[in-house]
Image 1 (cartoon, one colour):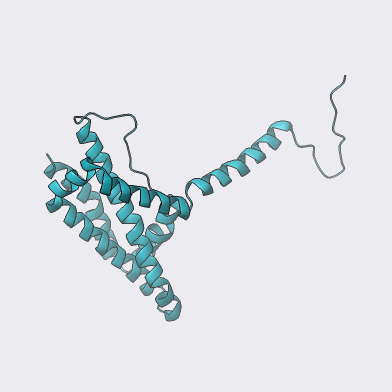
Image 2 (cartoon, helix red, strand yellow):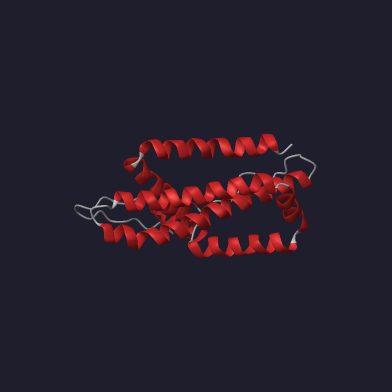
Length: 187
């Protein structure tokens, strides 16, 4: 039995098998990426995190014991969300209505994303502490809803850089230093 040979069509070069496979894989990967980073999944993970906080003793104990460190981190989340909102409103000054319509969504979205990442990071630290300070392969960087983070945090911060660059870079510097200071004081 001979393999089926595709005929050459004028103006259309034959597509090799590997190219067809890559196109199919690319579509699968993009669908998988969207499913993995969908807002519904992020919301479900946030609900699971709240349940773990309520029912799990190690995370709750860790947060309560370090409340003097967690409160400034939570205030940083609030300030950053307000800065994201201000960046959107400031960028759309020519179309003030658009900025005002987007502002509450950006505020709530950035609060959600940053709070989720903060408490996921705290959970990772609590689990590492529960394992005796050693790194577990399951632990690592906390889960980040990248699609939501790009829409509600990264894009508004970039808009803030355009509107008020000094404030944006100062905020980014504080965000770099905050986890370092938290880790130093959490010994």
